[in-house]
Image (cartoon, rainbow, N blue to C red; front, side, top):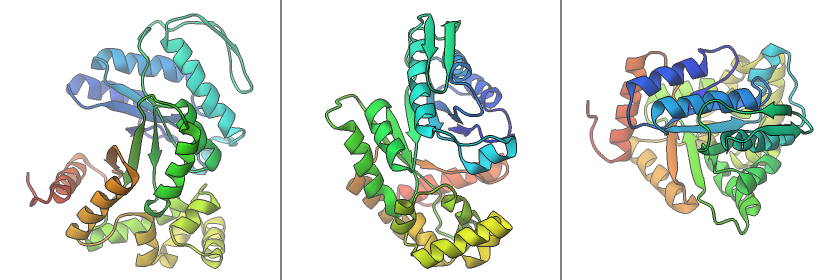
Length: 294
């Protein structure tokens, strides 16, 4: 999954290059219906799917503060934005000519030139209760963060799924911390876990009302960096997998078994190819119980 957040490297240029230089891995964008119209996303993803031989998938988010504020956009009606985005893209991928007049989007005799006739899997990365239920109701999978919130989040997803029998993918996205350097890095990133998170999630990751108020005030007055000095080891441990290599492996295995997880994805933000490749190799070796292997 390549993030389409703010003014980073263009996600579809990157995915196009990846499609040409790989043959097996799945290729996904993480995007939203505020900064990109769902019809434009449908065309871009259909193109990636074509050039990769059917390896594309898509993850939708509702648009967060860190992405929308720099562009002067407000997060209005996120449920409608996600719901209409899913419906519009599926109709366009069918190859039919689409007319649509919804609450957020409109199409007039729109039809894709690429990728017609194949439905690309759509996941939703969500935290709020309504979006979690919507993910279970209409999408192909859900992407979750926050170790302590997995149980309650999946209960909301299952409420939306109810009697659905279609294949559904449960994804846990995390960044493990099993060295002092990883734990220190996790503390610097903790503030981003708090932004736009509902009270349920904040409580489930171990924060009480006084901590929530103090952290919110720090973000409001000084931005994400102001939170760093307030973050403790215990706070990080409530949000993500932390411990020795063996403890992280056992914790991850327990989460997979307890919550019926299908996919574990590593949240990679380290600079540079070699640093990221080294992290992937090390986590793979750790998760499989092996030594570091190059």
